[in-house]
Amino acid sequence: MHRLFVAIRPPERVRDLLVDAMDDSPALRWVPDDNLHLTLRFVGEVERPLADDIAHALQRVRSDPFELRIDGVGRFDQRNGGAVWAGVKPKEPVATLAAKVDRACVAAGIEPERRLFHPHITLARFGRSAKSEVDPFVRRNAALASEQFEVGSFTLFESRLSRHGAHYEVVADFPLG
Ligand code: ATP
Ligand code: MG
Image 1: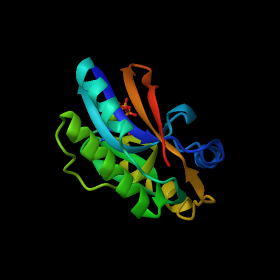
Image 2: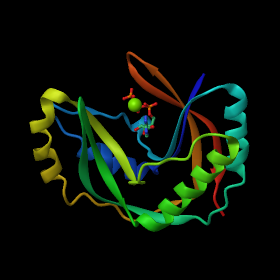
Image 3: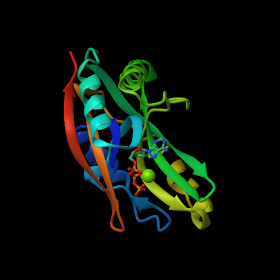
Image 4: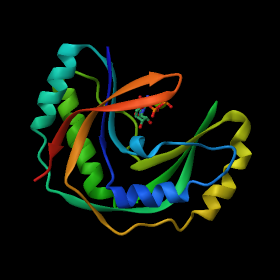
């Protein structure tokens, strides 16, 4: 099985800004620079033939390049902990691209995404016991912001999970425009 997701890799200067915001908050397990991304669509575990069909379908996604910027940070909470993320703006062009990517995945044979699209770049994960330690980081970084950056492509990644954390490999890049 192949664990796939479709994402945008931010450019180095934006990743530098994000990495610079990562501090010594003991509660937060930081995402390494190599793994920073904005998920357009999580595919999950699929067999090889379906993975190939998804890659082919993604080739037919058409979108002009567009600009994004980092705007603030926030948190998602789940039962066992959660994640701290950097928000991106504006929502519209990236949401449209995510919808096109979703339609391509559906055309290839997987179920549509039912959840609302919330564009973000995960910065850190935290455990259940650390929930109360996350807000100081979120408050300190409320004004985190980058210059606009161009999104000129999106990428199909394969995620390999291990005890040492996730490792992402590029399956294919898809240029925009
Ligand atoms: P780890 O699971 O070890 O913490 P990870 O979450 O970075 O690492 P994956 O679980 O393979 O690695 O996830 C890859 C990307 O897909 C991440 O952006 C993750 O947030 C997202 N993702 C994972 N599972 C889901 C899901 N069920 N629904 C939506 N997005 C998901
Ligand atoms: Mg995960």
